[in-house]
Length: 304
Image (cartoon, rainbow, N blue to C red):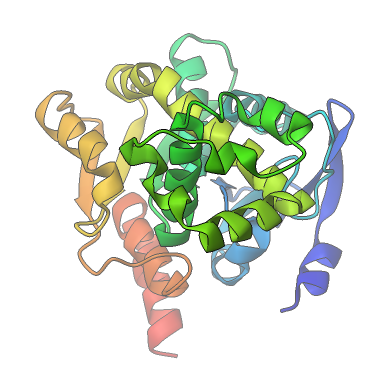
């Protein structure tokens, strides 16, 4: 399926004057249970097209592109805040008249799901959430970009990314450095040249905005989102991988400090991701949340 084919299957829903691209596999609202998928940077809805094709016979599946992603509007004044994305999700689900659903969320999208859980804990949203599945996608590219932007923001000559992008006319911010560990990688003139050229493109400037907001908010709201899991009565299935060192802190805290019956820590032993093994990744999740569907889909996928 091409991206254009995918676009033709969806529709646009207006949320706060932004058109969000939405795939809804069962808009006539049959008796199927509903799954909403919350994607996250660098993925968008199209990256899930294989598993949605598998799921749609069993569930009503809803996935959308966040503002600024995929086929959705790319507003110039959007902050790419995780809190804003969570509010967009809530408003979209209200417009679609959802009442009861399961959430599957990966990486960046997992933070959005935790913010939705936070609001649910305080009775700020009307939905009933049956399960929340938190997984990690193939994060090498994502964390390489996040770390690079973290180091740039840590450089005292790069005090605030928005001001830098708006006001700097040359690459002096990279070369006017102290002898700190954060600045070591920018002493290489070739690296400085490549980074600066990247900053001249709209897409790379957008990436800085997205990942800088992400970096700031996972620091600012870390306790808020850990407590959202701790205080929730919703069943949470937290998939972790032994190769995912960046998220080991959350995993250890959840297992050692916040052990609750409703939080199910599941090791993704084979390190499946939506990118490299979408069918097996989906079956792994269904094995935890719906055994009947898991067995039916397994037979259909790997036997027929």
